[in-house]
Image (cartoon, rainbow, N blue to C red; front, side, top):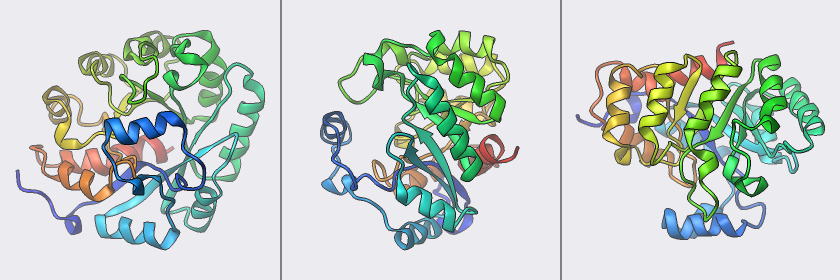
Length: 279
């Protein structure tokens, strides 16, 4: 399939980092840059608002979701969203699930004051990877997200850094979806090597999605592209994880996928619009 030019597409980039140069990167992030993505040092560079808007306009990105952290909120993300709420949403991470109430109060405050699209958590990245999403330690977060009608994104798949991986096996979401059927839940950063498990869970549960953040679209497995083309047309969401991967590269590769008419627009735009913003 010929690549669709940027002028003929629309997109929502569901995961963008704007402040990676504002803080010293942790050792695991350095390992990801060097070992997983073979990325240049420019990966650890913060973004300025005019530059980001120009890039979005050039690539047909109508809206981007910017990450921030409850413990150390990103002033860039907040400023960008306050100046252009029509162009930016916020993804909120850094929740302390072992002492949840302060984090949940802060999350509720974020949702009240900013255009928050989702909360986000990586099971391998806290608690030494000892708490899979089926553990009751997550239940206060699930309950609060249901109360706020706020989507929740959870990392799935083996993480790039040298961290324990088992907690990110998507099979743990089976019990979550059973116990919290109201929860809008999205697997992020793919689900490698458990793609088929993730697909089977999405067939089983209506409120479950998968985001291809930090995955080069041309490297997505055939099974996921087939699912996107068939039963999963409403279930797969686009994201670059810029600047880990550039918007231009990811959108160019996505536009070149062999997709049925109308499916590319669902993948790049309308699935995210409905899941994160149309409430």
